[in-house]
Amino acid sequence: MSEFIISKKDKDIIVIHNEIIKYGVMDLNLVQFKIILYCFSKIDKSLKANENIVVDIRTKELLEILNIPEHHSYLKKNLKQIMSKPIIIKHDKKEIICNWFNKIEYMENVGIVRFKIHDEIKEYLLVDRQFTKFIPKAIMGFKCKYSIFFYMYLKMYSEIYGSLNKKGISTKDIVEIELETIYSNLNLSELYKKNFYIFRIKILDLVLKDLKNTDVKVINFNLIRTYHRVTSLIFEITYRQKIIKEWT
Image (cartoon, rainbow, N blue to C red; front, side, top):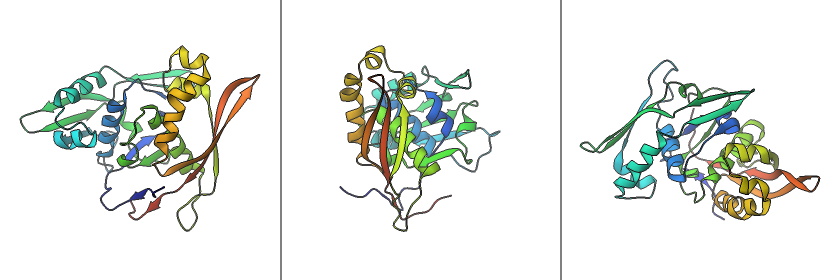
Protein backbone atom coordinates (compact mmCIF):
# COMPACT_ATOMS: atom_id res chain seq x y z
CA MET A 1 0.00 0.00 0.00
CA SER A 2 1.34 3.42 -0.95
CA GLU A 3 2.23 5.84 1.80
CA PHE A 4 -0.01 8.81 2.43
CA ILE A 5 2.18 11.88 2.03
CA ILE A 6 1.58 15.57 2.56
CA SER A 7 3.42 17.47 -0.15
CA LYS A 8 4.43 21.09 -0.44
CA LYS A 9 1.40 21.63 -2.65
CA ASP A 10 -0.94 20.81 0.24
CA LYS A 11 -1.24 24.33 1.61
CA ASP A 12 -4.89 24.18 2.64
CA ILE A 13 -5.90 22.65 5.94
CA ILE A 14 -9.35 21.79 7.24
CA VAL A 15 -9.69 22.81 10.88
CA ILE A 16 -12.84 21.66 12.65
CA HIS A 17 -13.89 21.71 16.29
CA ASN A 18 -14.00 18.37 18.08
CA GLU A 19 -17.53 19.07 19.31
CA ILE A 20 -18.77 18.97 15.71
CA ILE A 21 -17.03 15.63 15.20
CA LYS A 22 -18.30 14.12 18.45
CA TYR A 23 -21.78 15.60 18.65
CA GLY A 24 -22.71 17.02 15.24
CA VAL A 25 -25.64 15.54 13.32
CA MET A 26 -25.23 16.21 9.59
CA ASP A 27 -27.78 15.15 6.97
CA LEU A 28 -25.54 15.73 3.95
CA ASN A 29 -24.72 13.74 0.85
CA LEU A 30 -21.10 13.04 -0.10
CA VAL A 31 -20.75 15.99 -2.51
CA GLN A 32 -22.27 18.44 -0.02
CA PHE A 33 -19.99 17.23 2.76
CA LYS A 34 -16.95 17.67 0.51
CA ILE A 35 -18.04 21.17 -0.56
CA ILE A 36 -18.35 22.29 3.05
CA LEU A 37 -15.03 20.83 4.17
CA TYR A 38 -13.18 22.14 1.13
CA CYS A 39 -14.58 25.60 1.85
CA PHE A 40 -13.37 25.29 5.46
CA SER A 41 -9.87 24.48 4.21
CA LYS A 42 -9.77 27.89 2.50
CA ILE A 43 -10.55 29.90 5.65
CA ASP A 44 -7.93 32.43 6.71
CA LYS A 45 -6.85 30.95 10.06
CA SER A 46 -5.70 34.37 11.32
CA LEU A 47 -9.26 35.71 11.43
CA LYS A 48 -10.91 36.45 14.79
CA ALA A 49 -14.27 35.07 15.89
CA ASN A 50 -15.85 38.53 15.67
CA GLU A 51 -14.85 38.98 12.01
CA ASN A 52 -16.91 37.89 9.02
CA ILE A 53 -15.56 34.82 7.27
CA VAL A 54 -15.99 34.97 3.50
CA VAL A 55 -14.42 32.37 1.22
CA ASP A 56 -14.16 32.72 -2.57
CA ILE A 57 -13.48 29.57 -4.58
CA ARG A 58 -13.16 29.42 -8.35
CA THR A 59 -16.04 27.43 -9.82
CA LYS A 60 -13.65 25.45 -12.02
CA GLU A 61 -11.53 24.53 -8.99
CA LEU A 62 -14.58 23.37 -7.05
CA LEU A 63 -15.83 21.25 -9.93
CA GLU A 64 -12.39 19.66 -10.35
CA ILE A 65 -11.87 18.86 -6.66
CA LEU A 66 -15.34 17.27 -6.57
CA ASN A 67 -14.56 15.35 -9.77
CA ILE A 68 -17.69 16.69 -11.51
CA PRO A 69 -16.17 18.81 -14.33
CA GLU A 70 -18.66 20.92 -16.33
CA HIS A 71 -21.59 19.83 -14.14
CA HIS A 72 -22.58 23.36 -13.15
CA SER A 73 -26.26 22.52 -12.68
CA TYR A 74 -25.40 19.63 -10.35
CA LEU A 75 -23.11 21.90 -8.32
CA LYS A 76 -25.82 24.56 -8.06
CA LYS A 77 -28.35 21.94 -6.95
CA ASN A 78 -26.10 20.79 -4.11
CA LEU A 79 -25.29 24.35 -3.03
CA LYS A 80 -29.00 25.06 -2.74
CA GLN A 81 -29.57 21.89 -0.74
CA ILE A 82 -26.77 22.74 1.68
CA MET A 83 -28.68 25.89 2.63
CA SER A 84 -31.65 23.77 3.69
CA LYS A 85 -29.62 21.26 5.72
CA PRO A 86 -28.54 22.74 9.05
CA ILE A 87 -26.08 21.11 11.40
CA ILE A 88 -27.41 19.99 14.80
CA ILE A 89 -24.93 19.81 17.67
CA LYS A 90 -26.31 17.72 20.53
CA HIS A 91 -24.45 17.97 23.81
CA ASP A 92 -25.18 18.35 27.54
CA LYS A 93 -28.94 17.95 27.04
CA LYS A 94 -29.17 20.83 24.59
CA GLU A 95 -29.25 21.19 20.82
CA ILE A 96 -27.66 23.93 18.73
CA ILE A 97 -29.26 24.14 15.29
CA CYS A 98 -27.71 26.43 12.71
CA ASN A 99 -26.88 26.69 9.02
CA TRP A 100 -23.36 26.29 7.71
CA PHE A 101 -23.51 29.53 5.74
CA ASN A 102 -25.33 32.85 5.92
CA LYS A 103 -25.40 32.81 2.14
CA ILE A 104 -23.79 31.28 -0.93
CA GLU A 105 -23.33 33.35 -4.07
CA TYR A 106 -22.86 31.58 -7.41
CA MET A 107 -21.28 34.29 -9.57
CA GLU A 108 -21.23 32.91 -13.11
CA ASN A 109 -19.99 36.18 -14.62
CA VAL A 110 -16.65 35.89 -12.78
CA GLY A 111 -16.54 32.11 -12.24
CA ILE A 112 -16.58 32.33 -8.45
CA VAL A 113 -18.62 30.72 -5.66
CA ARG A 114 -18.64 32.93 -2.57
CA PHE A 115 -19.39 31.38 0.82
CA LYS A 116 -20.21 33.49 3.87
CA ILE A 117 -19.78 31.32 6.97
CA HIS A 118 -22.70 31.49 9.38
CA ASP A 119 -22.02 33.57 12.49
CA GLU A 120 -23.00 30.75 14.85
CA ILE A 121 -20.60 28.24 13.30
CA LYS A 122 -17.50 30.48 13.24
CA GLU A 123 -16.36 29.57 16.75
CA TYR A 124 -16.16 25.92 15.67
CA LEU A 125 -13.76 26.70 12.83
CA LEU A 126 -11.06 28.96 14.25
CA VAL A 127 -8.07 27.26 15.82
CA ASP A 128 -7.71 26.34 19.48
CA ARG A 129 -6.64 23.24 21.40
CA GLN A 130 -9.90 21.39 20.79
CA PHE A 131 -9.61 21.24 17.02
CA THR A 132 -8.71 18.48 14.58
CA LYS A 133 -6.71 19.29 11.43
CA PHE A 134 -6.46 17.43 8.13
CA ILE A 135 -5.94 18.18 4.45
CA PRO A 136 -8.68 18.02 1.79
CA LYS A 137 -7.07 15.24 -0.23
CA ALA A 138 -7.50 12.89 2.72
CA ILE A 139 -11.26 12.80 2.18
CA MET A 140 -11.87 13.97 -1.41
CA GLY A 141 -11.41 10.46 -2.81
CA PHE A 142 -13.99 8.86 -0.52
CA LYS A 143 -16.83 6.98 -2.21
CA CYS A 144 -19.01 6.75 0.91
CA LYS A 145 -20.25 9.84 2.72
CA TYR A 146 -20.11 8.07 6.09
CA SER A 147 -16.36 7.60 5.70
CA ILE A 148 -15.88 11.29 6.48
CA PHE A 149 -17.34 10.92 9.97
CA PHE A 150 -15.22 7.85 10.76
CA TYR A 151 -12.08 9.49 9.37
CA MET A 152 -12.60 12.68 11.40
CA TYR A 153 -13.38 10.71 14.57
CA LEU A 154 -10.29 8.49 14.28
CA LYS A 155 -8.15 11.47 13.25
CA MET A 156 -9.39 13.41 16.28
CA TYR A 157 -8.45 10.52 18.55
CA SER A 158 -4.98 10.16 17.01
CA GLU A 159 -4.29 13.89 17.47
CA ILE A 160 -5.46 13.92 21.09
CA TYR A 161 -4.03 10.62 22.33
CA GLY A 162 -1.68 9.29 19.65
CA SER A 163 2.09 9.62 19.75
CA LEU A 164 4.46 9.42 16.78
CA ASN A 165 7.86 7.75 16.65
CA LYS A 166 10.89 9.22 14.86
CA LYS A 167 9.60 7.92 11.54
CA GLY A 168 6.27 9.68 12.00
CA ILE A 169 4.32 6.49 12.65
CA SER A 170 2.29 5.95 15.80
CA THR A 171 2.13 2.87 17.95
CA LYS A 172 -1.13 0.96 17.78
CA ASP A 173 -4.03 2.83 19.36
CA ILE A 174 -7.42 1.45 20.33
CA VAL A 175 -10.49 3.58 19.64
CA GLU A 176 -13.98 2.63 20.78
CA ILE A 177 -17.04 4.22 19.18
CA GLU A 178 -20.46 3.40 20.56
CA LEU A 179 -23.03 2.45 17.95
CA GLU A 180 -25.52 4.90 19.43
CA THR A 181 -23.04 7.71 18.70
CA ILE A 182 -22.66 6.49 15.12
CA TYR A 183 -26.40 6.12 14.57
CA SER A 184 -27.08 9.57 15.99
CA ASN A 185 -24.29 11.50 14.25
CA LEU A 186 -24.94 9.87 10.90
CA ASN A 187 -28.71 10.29 11.25
CA LEU A 188 -29.26 6.67 10.24
CA SER A 189 -32.67 5.11 9.70
CA GLU A 190 -34.22 2.42 11.88
CA LEU A 191 -33.24 -0.16 9.27
CA TYR A 192 -29.56 0.12 10.23
CA LYS A 193 -30.27 0.34 13.94
CA LYS A 194 -32.28 -2.85 13.97
CA ASN A 195 -30.00 -4.91 11.75
CA PHE A 196 -26.25 -4.67 12.34
CA TYR A 197 -25.55 -6.93 9.36
CA ILE A 198 -27.08 -4.36 7.00
CA PHE A 199 -25.07 -1.61 8.70
CA ARG A 200 -21.94 -3.72 8.25
CA ILE A 201 -22.29 -4.43 4.53
CA LYS A 202 -23.93 -1.14 3.46
CA ILE A 203 -21.79 1.26 5.49
CA LEU A 204 -18.93 -0.17 7.55
CA ASP A 205 -17.33 -2.25 4.79
CA LEU A 206 -17.37 0.76 2.44
CA VAL A 207 -15.88 2.97 5.16
CA LEU A 208 -13.02 0.57 5.81
CA LYS A 209 -12.26 0.46 2.08
CA ASP A 210 -12.13 4.28 1.90
CA LEU A 211 -9.89 4.56 4.96
CA LYS A 212 -7.19 2.38 3.38
CA ASN A 213 -5.90 5.37 1.43
CA THR A 214 -5.60 7.86 4.28
CA ASP A 215 -3.08 8.70 6.98
CA VAL A 216 -5.14 6.88 9.62
CA LYS A 217 -4.78 3.17 8.99
CA VAL A 218 -7.28 0.73 10.48
CA ILE A 219 -5.31 -2.42 11.25
CA ASN A 220 -8.21 -4.32 12.74
CA PHE A 221 -11.61 -3.82 14.29
CA ASN A 222 -13.73 -5.81 16.71
CA LEU A 223 -17.28 -5.78 17.98
CA ILE A 224 -18.40 -5.29 21.57
CA ARG A 225 -21.61 -7.09 22.42
CA THR A 226 -23.96 -6.59 25.34
CA TYR A 227 -26.48 -9.39 25.77
CA HIS A 228 -25.71 -10.64 22.23
CA ARG A 229 -26.34 -7.20 20.75
CA VAL A 230 -23.53 -5.20 19.13
CA THR A 231 -23.14 -1.96 21.10
CA SER A 232 -19.67 -0.63 20.14
CA LEU A 233 -16.98 -0.86 17.49
CA ILE A 234 -13.33 -1.18 18.53
CA PHE A 235 -10.80 0.10 15.98
CA GLU A 236 -7.10 -0.70 16.13
CA ILE A 237 -5.34 2.11 14.29
CA THR A 238 -1.95 3.57 13.47
CA TYR A 239 -1.34 7.13 12.42
CA ARG A 240 0.99 6.66 9.46
CA GLN A 241 1.55 10.09 8.03
CA LYS A 242 4.89 11.19 6.60
CA ILE A 243 4.90 14.99 6.85
CA ILE A 244 7.26 16.89 4.57
CA LYS A 245 5.65 20.26 5.17
CA GLU A 246 4.92 21.87 8.53
CA TRP A 247 2.03 24.16 9.30
CA THR A 248 0.89 26.21 12.26
